[in-house]
Image (cartoon, rainbow, N blue to C red; front, top):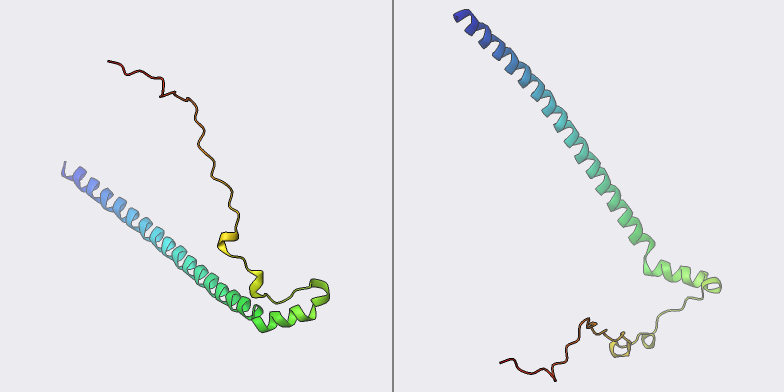
Length: 114
């Protein structure tokens, strides 16, 4: 009986060691995937910063003004003037639609039930 107990204990220890070994490698793989994702996110953020800087550089007002003047014949762009803007009370909003009544009830001719 003791020998069976020793064999079962040894098998349990071997099984637990295998399980711990397997979990260790799965954990290391998950950590390496997380690090790779962090690197990818960092690269994407860095690329986004570069793109934002390029966008700001290309949209400088003096550069756009020069481009509008160079391409005036093709585009016909003029500087904005204050009279070109409207006021809020000049905006024609569509009228609000009334909710459709599906089952109208005539309340004038109803008699009080006593």
